[in-house]
Image (tube, rainbow, N blue to C red; front, side, top):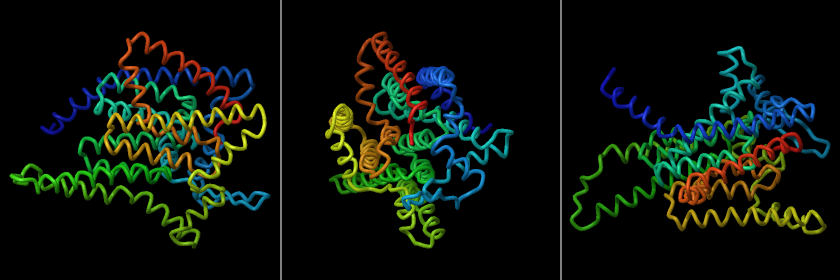
Length: 396
């Protein structure tokens, strides 16, 4: 064993030990959610595993893993739903699992999501601990686990995989590991369109570091010798790596469709999905107030959006690091301002974990017993809602 390995292994062991309470708590919350889903599904004469692995987007990912790209569905209204809308990393991993094990592609999606959700929980803990300390890190993970749509974290969807890659990329940025940050950002760009948020965070941090260094060099009495020459090079390489995943896939789709760099936008248009600045969502909410009791749903939507805005303002006021603010802001804007699939917005916001840090700080300031009882009650409510939701309309 080399000296480097001797140093790295204990460091990783210590990091896992520090994260253990958060990971065990996360696993307990997810186990509760799956148990409630299994019971609820049995009462409804449905198969819980099928609900997790073979509905909606999970079916599209499985088909890509098995047959590749090129499948599309033409709807009676003329819309064309092409599987080119789905980014390739999750189906690649499903295919890998199926090839090295007796598991099916759907099983592979479930396994990837299960492992990725744990990696995401660890990444969220690492970020929160680095910024605010271990206690806040634990509560941040538990809050992410008990989100109302937390059951999606256990589905064969790409949310858990994306959140894991995003959280560790942000941690790498915060700790100055620029090549790691850029590589993980590249992978987020192969996972979901919102990988743009991670790229933006890496670039914002890189530009800010460059500006700080320029200012330090120009300061009176500065000798410019406090920074290793390799750091700016690694930072520049990380920034160059970050957008390559998304760029490669978008350009490939353009080539595949024969429509050039904007081909991916045409694919999304076939799903009636795009970015309109929130106009369609605002109209959707306004329409809720045309009758009763749908007006109650409209009030709930307004309260939800207001809570998101308030949390982001608190994040700014608490001076969260710039990469977290940029990342959370872009994820939130892209989720709220998409023009279609309004029922999907709660799960599209799952990766925006920095918004939970103000709440985690508040819980960390309370007595452990009181915080545990509060989060435990929310965990039960989340598990019940997850069983109800997935046995009903569920995530489109």
